[in-house]
Length: 397
Image 1 (tube, rainbow, N blue to C red):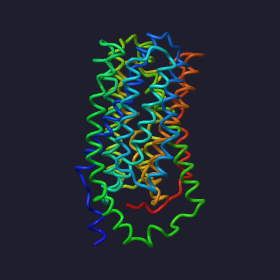
Image 2: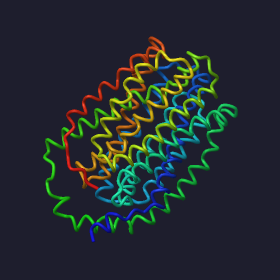
Image 3: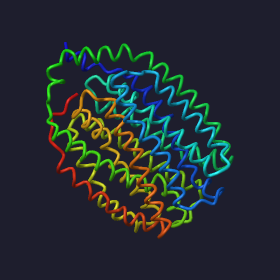
Image 4: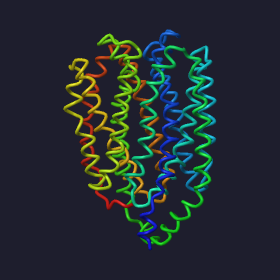
């Protein structure tokens, strides 16, 4: 009986969740995709660009674990709708911002919106997964990655030719996301009831102290460190890849945005493949492949021509993105009764650590140049050796 409950997967809910994740991350990806325009319009330097990212990421990072802890105690199925309202207001504010201070406030509102969205949406993906956790997280995250990839495309074909005010046009997508999230909220009671029934039948297994505090502490620390190094390298692309292509190869802004889209699209494919394969061969192996696999490619990248830069960046992001679902599920297996906290913590880390990286890389690029940033970052995958200390656990469903 337990097996039947565990194996039931709500595919329609997962697809809609992935779609809302796509819309959420598309809207927030318009921020870095608009950097070349903002830099030119307001005469910003690279450090100020990094500070925009830091403001956006910190606003998203600080609130997410708190929201996760609150919704673990008091599930709030409609909270993502509220989060999308913040995103909508920040987007419109950014479209009509006329100063650097207003830009910072606008991106902070978008960050807060994402921080409210992710914990409860992550919980729903966990509930709707049945026994296919990697597949479910893959669908949920591929939506986010695809949305992040589409941002530069919309920027290239809409924001660049029509200017900063055209950002307000994307409010329509925020309204669509709110409608879809309201539908998901209406389904949560039924799906969570099945999940809680399954958990009640496995009460002894789930609530027993399966892992010691030391195991949990070491596991979360290593996973956090791996997330930090992956985000540090990834942020060098999200915030500065267009500048790198423009400065080194002389590409136009639209052409560089399309290159960024291809790079980010590789992450969408990688996260889905990684989630599916992780269900088959285990999270531990996928994490190892993801953290060390890109190293030879990252070392070659700073010395490649334009064609091979495109090929290498696709391969790098494809491999690096494959571990995110496994890292998230690994953390959930360490703390199976804290789904909201884990979702908020690790998506919050995605925001916060990426923001710290962006500010540091912006300062580095300002004092040296963007090419130096990529030479230094090429060694970052070596930090993946920390996966050696990751505790081996029995992976739950």
